[in-house]
Image 1 (cartoon, one colour):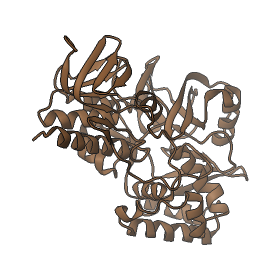
Image 2 (cartoon, helix red, strand yellow; image 1 turned 90 degrees about the vertical axis):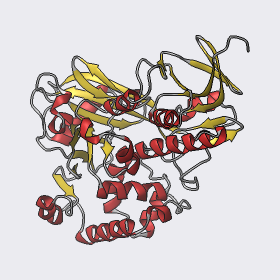
Image 3 (cartoon, helix red, strand yellow; image 1 turned 45 degrees about the vertical axis):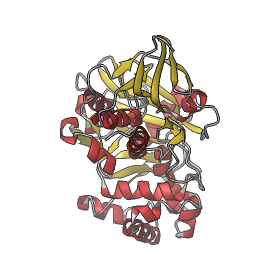
Length: 414
């Protein structure tokens, strides 16, 4: 078309996969434009400032064991504020139980070993299963997609108390679902990453990571506030007019990608809702994640400022609490009541600061799905995102790398 800007590559979506693909393509010397309709990069990894408090779009963490994260991020500049490798679990008996990785936190080994939440035999089975997961090469683990996590845990003798009181409460907040229908391959890879890595949040919030990636792009590449309405061959239609390219990469969430690329296999999406409260006094001094062994509506809750004081502008405590599903399934009154039980303190005087509802938080990853899916759809049309790899930071970054490699090869870039 006469007068239509022409580039080597147009990338749609400035989330983690789009940012990484764009960075790598620019390094290949290609003329790249990265479009996003939002006012800042990051996609679902964004930090909102609410009355000066840092509120991430849902409870998210970075895991230092992710190879793609170590390759891509300047971890020193992010100043990761770590959480303890374990959990405080409120049991059906009303007691608060401590469960931690004894190899990572020897100081909590005795408390974990003697705690009555789980029978000793279940703890031994969990340690043995973890050892097998760590001993298995990740590439081999990734091929075990034939069964769900629930089936895999049952086959390992991990059922009953250890699943209901610990594994299901812990994994549900990570997976976005509580039935443990997620592929066993992905859950084993996740478990390996938690056993080996440190989880935490950047000092400036989770949005600091995509902002860091965007800051490394050449001037003029990232164009925010540019909503894409359609992709027609090598032409991308935006509110400001069409843009043509030799290759087009759609690096959005799965649902948006399916709308822009009809016929794309779109997995169901899990919704997550996170409430942020300001208690007059922090309900816990540890950086442990708090879980509910009774299967209540709160998947996890944590005192964010215990790990990252920078999330508060004035020293007040900030509590993050996440529910599986949209916000209208659980009212704020119910959330407040459950938090009183989980922390063992009154919550009537907690101020509600913010609610972050993410309807498309995580793509489902059911048994039978390969860990990696093709990123090249047709001649010059590519797709990237955590729905092409695993629903994780690692998956999004790897997808961006794979897509950049495929595009560069197709265009003959050096």
